[in-house]
Length: 265
Ligand code: IPE
Ligand code: IPE
Ligand code: MG
Image (tube, rainbow, N blue to C red; front, side, top):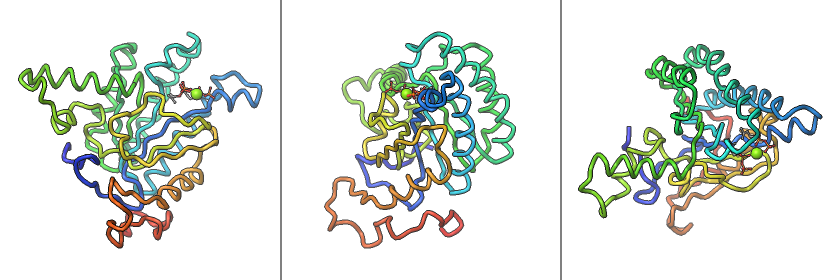
């Protein structure tokens, strides 16, 4: 599935419901701090928000959801917090995968998994294999993921497979090697927690993504908050380099309601 249009080579198809949403789930620590709880309590509540948002995306007909759970820079955190997060990933996978499968969700983990415990890697492989035939929502959890790591691993693997390409690599050559090769470029990027930065999340494919930042802390992010992000997306004019006047009459997304679902297509 690498035939999606690149936004810098062609104008991709855009619908009123973003096909691919990429989220930086930020603000767990502050959520906990506001309640005089340890930071890890925020991570635990963050998992509840993941459940809610996955369900809401299935209901709204979003095809791809990519969630940033642990960045390549998050190893710099206190050892106890890192180890809590690793345990939480294992528990979450064990607990959730059956339900995800029942709901037709295809699960993937993206990132450099080589740094993780074998048990976690085994659970990931099993979950990916179990859900490989599902087509409702493509859920990716980005763990030990970094946008720069992704571009570099893609270039290195591409050149290893095709040494003759050195000096002549094209976008089309690179695309199949990126971690998100199976997905169209994100239509909508959401960052919770108030910071307005990309923090080394998906870099290559955010080239023409609509960016949405909200102060809502991740554990408080729910279906209504998701709808606010989608409504903001629907009000954007996606020009992909063209002028407003050049857009087809029906190109505006604003006239559609977030309540419309896939069935109305
Ligand atoms: C995001 O929440 C979760 C991870 C990075 C794992 P944070 O833990 O960064 O929460 P804040 O930003 O400190 O509030
Ligand atoms: C980004 O959040 C990474 C994840 C949500 C997994 P951070 O909280 O680590 O980002 P910075 O370091 O404040 O930019
Ligand atoms: Mg943070």
